[in-house]
Length: 467
Image 1 (cartoon, one colour):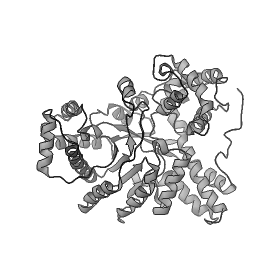
Image 2 (cartoon, rainbow, N blue to C red):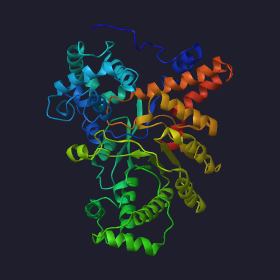
Image 3 (tube, one colour):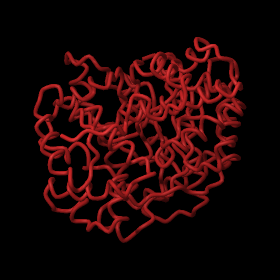
């Protein structure tokens, strides 16, 4: 195959300090991927992928959005075209992704997993497709093998409270050496305004072996599932919300609101906010009781294209950045928990870069000296997990808090080929520090700076999650 020198050893590293920081202190650190959407079923069954489209294009709405922008018909994205046709459509799109992180990720993934240096385009597509497919049949490129290749130490998937966790149980009993844990994601029990809410509660009640007819029943049902997740090794939760709800409420109000919803009656926007405020507070207190880490991914404006939502469903590439008010409610929610001494370790992820300084300064209000980095400003995610977004998050955290306590990168991905994003993050991190050594803003003590780099890359997360 043709060879190019595009992704050389010092990709994104602009001076000798950046190079030494990366190669000596960051590159070889194991990966703790403490939040992702990988399939535990595929890991447990050690799936062997028939072709690259199955592991690379299926489920990747980053790629789907780019293909749609290039005028690719939906047939070749999520439709009934063959896997090869979908790959060819993506290959034709790749040259047009210059300056989009997809261009970097695409070629990093081809190089790191399959040793392919050739740029992907319409001319090279056939060769690359055949070569990767041949390699995917090798034992080292099974699902578990792909994780081993990237020096992954821990994977934390994300499951609904109704999940049986059967595949996590299989993995726990297996000889697979990589730790695979899960995060509790109860958003469907929180979003009371959803049309399918009552159907979901029926399912939750069935799994929890409880009839959910009252708000107290709901709390009991969720607690039973938290106990179940905890007994299966779970020690963290995750929420994907537009913003934190923190309205004032009374227990009587919440009981009435819940009863109305269960009877199929409509509830007002304010009633929904009061309910969500109550259930989030209950969950936060319960997470503290169990010693879990709570994560909040905030700021997404979801399902904007209702026509395509109806056709393809959620999580298919029709979401964007929202401009919600975050500060006041976030402060109120955290303060309520802290006031009861029930604020557990907390990670706040922000999707709107205009709010970076709000989040970076907010965490300092609740870092009370009890735990190093107790409240974290999480890594740039979704639309912000690229070079510019990573740098902005790191700069905001550095200016408003202590970047030295930061727990670093996560994939938040559905793809088993996404782990070079940790390398990408580490290169950006090392270059940022290296530039400031070169400019005299940081001392040329590479052991001092290198320790911070290695901590952000791995050790801080290892300590924080107690994996």
